[in-house]
Length: 89
Length: 411
Ligand SMILES: Cc1ncc(COP(=O)(O)O)c(C=O)c1O
Image (tube, rainbow over all chains, first blue to last red; front, side, top):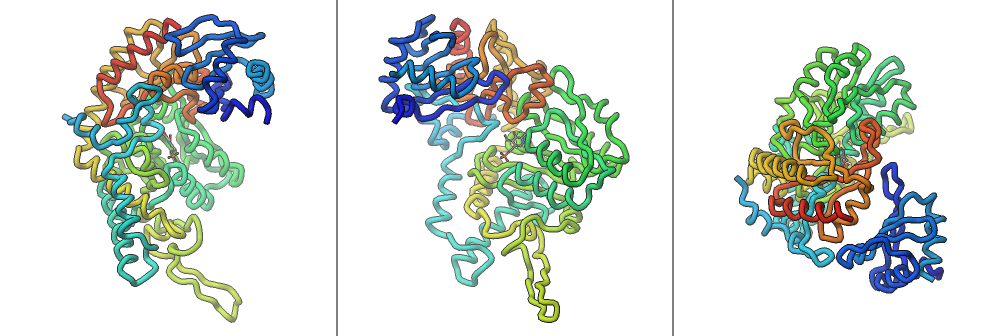
């Protein structure tokens, strides 16, 4: 199983012109996934230890303690998967 | 006045906590929650009465048939149709509109004809007509909307002509909550001998609707947006139109007779009476009975009270949203022109960002295009967040939304 499939339950391409990509982490793996991401990405802002505004490479994204993340302005799922592979490895 | 505390007791899901917070459900334009009366009606049907309808002579089948027929009668009376012969049960608004497109439209619309829709339609009142126009060659035209999302009536009047055979319009926009003047539109359409199909997905759950009074030809709505289960909805049609139309799907239930003719080696078929002619196959009996229970629940509250409650919530929310610096409320600013749907955006954030942030606080609302991309394009919006209210929502929930939005503005 790939590292992304190990942690990610689903990736949704949200409708709207922004084409945001929403990542839902597996429920039982979400804390581990978030911990790994927080170790690698640069923290720009934290709100109530619940919401993390992050940057990594050229991507800016937000991770929620509830186990979801939103990636903006990526080219598509391929780019997202390669970022997630790095973040979750 | 609604006794909202009492109503809330009927909705088991409202006791849930989401992400550690009490659930606040503001996505009622997408689907409503279900009261225990509806849930129990579905359970009771399967525990006590389940059998295929109209097929057998035994007791259970008769009970199931009677319940299903009664459901048609009560729904017909809820929208003031003449009777159950004008009330076809379908899967929802989408199927109802497709039924009209692929029965009436497929046979009646010709190359030189026009279908007049509006740019505020949900995709389900655009796609069937655009698809059918590829087969039949007619033109689909779109009446314009104004900057605040209200219908540009003069543009509708300009575009309608003797070529127009059908005017398709939503009663209430699922994006802005704008309420269209259906009576006026129907009168205009009939002056040009065009029929009127109304998408009532966002009106029937929220206000009194009288299809006879509105003088519409077809009227579509979905049960799941008005407390009923998913997979059940209604197409109202004037009896004389439905009688003249060919059926949609073919199969059991919709036929009176299928007789084999030896001499021609063919089967000749005669249709069942209305509404069954349009309900081929084993129907969603449980859904229909759930819809009847939902209608009883709403009738009991009174649709006028439902509308007033939502109006009070909308007025309150529109007022309080003004306190949020970075929020732009979209659509008409005057709550009188709309019902309980409020689209908005927060500066510097996508609507999905907003919805995910709110989700962390247990607040569920919709983001994106809401299946109405042309309207967003026209208003110059990349997407929008949308709060939509129903009978169980409270001012306290709106206060909580505002508090969280103000926190989010700081993110
Ligand atoms: C205005 C409008 N029309 C049609 C629909 C489609 O309804 P359904 O998905 O129940 O068929 C919706 C649902 O969101 C709606 O809001």
